[in-house]
Length: 517
Picture 1: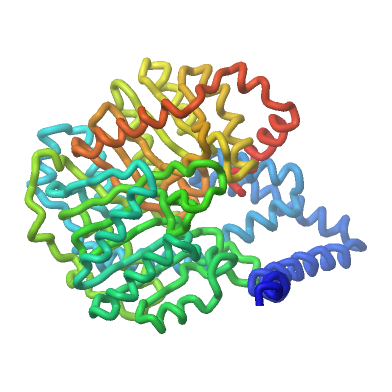
Picture 2: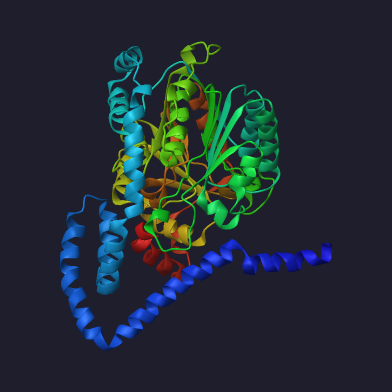
């Protein structure tokens, strides 16, 4: 049997679902090329018509209420290829499938908003403590729909390895329900041990639900995996399955990582359910990732986040109140400070994830320390980071030294010299890859979640995180940053200039179209 395994893998590769989807996409692309070739006799006429139509397209782009970097990318594409640029822009903007999801999600949020009210005593306490943070909290509640809480304990994990042990421990305590939502699930030790616990909990009568992003079904899991889970008693859904059709519907991925246990404990952070996140599998050197566990009142927000996405494909909404049960064992502590879980949708015109980061930079007085796997920034973020450094704020960014995506790394390096010259310190984690998405400022504010500093996370993906203010865990976040810094090399302007000329060119070209990648 062992000798037949390579043949089996080869046949799976050739005739598997991933290969079929790629083949069908290539057929569609080939059909488009053939159609264009068929129209070659009318090329001058068609080109003239598209040139005429591209002019109003440019007007529409310039007046579109979007990030200027996106406008520049679209206009560049229109200049290079007016016909393709105009057609592609129209195709993206129509987005019928995406608009249907947005309407459904908006209705769910509207109908369930009453379950997430802002407690007045918490609001008044925050106003007395720090009016600036209170204004930010008001924005998050009014426009993102998430309140700020007290009576919530936060525990920070500086490695996925440590978070994994606590996740298993908390899953084993479940009595009523477990919700899991992840971008990536891959077979291996991590998912195997979690799944074993889930199966046992199902036998004990615990309700278990699982959501994973459709990119898993494309290459990591069988297309019928939800049925396999259902047979084990686990309710399972795939968010936006990859289908063999060219569609912008598949551009908005569920990048969130959420675990909720009994409405009492919740986890989020950078880690997915795959072995590289706990350094069981080595892919890009040592994998530096982070997570946060919260216990107390704020878990209610994560419970609602999960159910809102789950109910997108449901005819009847869940009873949200049933799953939002206060934890009677959690007693308020002065060190709990304030905790604000948040979610960011690419469909609602609010850049919640970026607003969290910008607010922390704008309101810092001493330092802002950042860990991120990617650095693909819009103009506002670049200007804000530079302005903070020029004011004397200690701005430090830790990036990977061994990247997982070479093209994203080359784009990131195009920002290095500009930021360093302005006073921003950039470091690379020499043991391997940083996948953490962490901001910490002035020993009093921190954010831990799923939001990368790139266009996909900030504009195109569903994301989530936890904003902490005066919580005891903030000290642990900063301590981890300083400890990680000792394993990094500082990047200088000279280092930037030593980069091979062709890599500089590739990076600068990719930077122009980065918003469309």
